[in-house]
Length: 109
Image 1 (cartoon, rainbow, N blue to C red):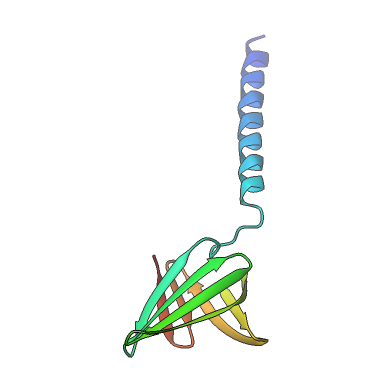
Image 2 (cartoon, rainbow, N blue to C red; image 1 turned 90 degrees about the horizontal axis):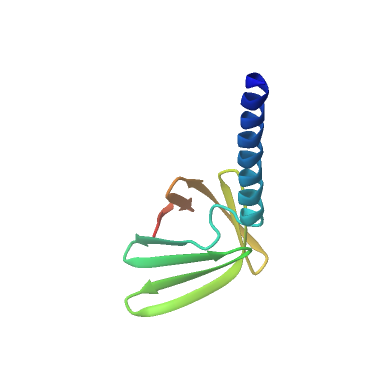
């Protein structure tokens, strides 16, 4: 009887953990490491800000008070990030809170 109670207790704990993990996975379905984030970089006096909202992104470049915004879509596969604007692809690498695209390193805000 004592072993049965111990077994039942362990089974309940395993079931609770399993259900908790399943609900977390469902909440994050469709999200990726960039979704809902903003990244900033400065290079040669130009400030870049990229905002990701799966599957879209917008990038604003500010150079001496002049602003330009570009929009497109993105995909992430492992550490490789592909931005697509007007049919052209640009590839970058994601590593923790750093995103490097064409030699410019962005930091997660």
